[in-house]
Image (tube, rainbow over all chains, first blue to last red; front, side, top):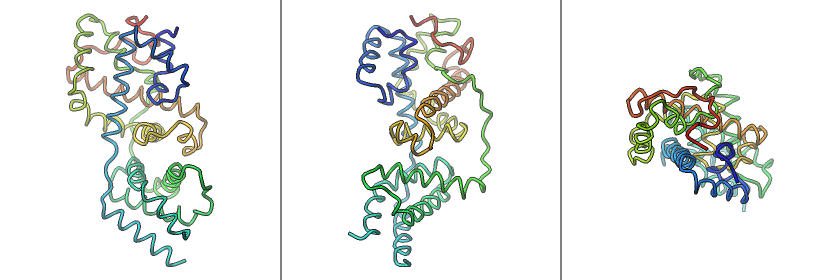
Length: 78
Length: 207
């Protein structure tokens, strides 16, 4: 059985889906019986998703056009 | 299919991601657009060195990063806050549970952590906290959390071992949560500072 320390050590890898199947199950088994660890994992996961939503500004479509246009010029110059 | 058409087809689906990565360095739209454009042209010139069947996204990200380092970073004097190593392993939830008035705080903290308004409260602060991180730590967070790249791909882009990716992520996320904790305390969202920030490995509230 994993302890809280074991789970904390693997928390990032768990949320990033970088654990082996076996370790992932071991963490999941611990989370079933441990509310504080479960809360910690949920919180970390929410922060991860918030970072994703707040740090990904969309590219201006005009900029895409300009880049592809510039690329075309480069190709023609070859 | 010509080389140029193949290149265009390969990069087109990743332009938004490249822009996001460039923006994480430059912090403004105009510079991010210029950086992407310069990187795409560099990529095209170096396309012969791309190994077919490997990860084009990781390859392009490496070019954006190297272009930024070689040409742009010199121009930008980005001010970063001082970095405290003790932030490593800091956990917002643990701190809430370790606070002195545990019984009262656990109720508040639980409400707060499960509150759907968490994003509304911390969203802007999160961006500020992220931007204040040293570049190497911001980089791993962006590649992992925003681009959902594997540790292996991140290691390839940053040219560091996977173990370093893991430790940088742990330190960066700890620092991020420490900043959010400070903000939550300042705003009265949680009412007590942790006893020993970052030093607790297994809090007393955990078994």
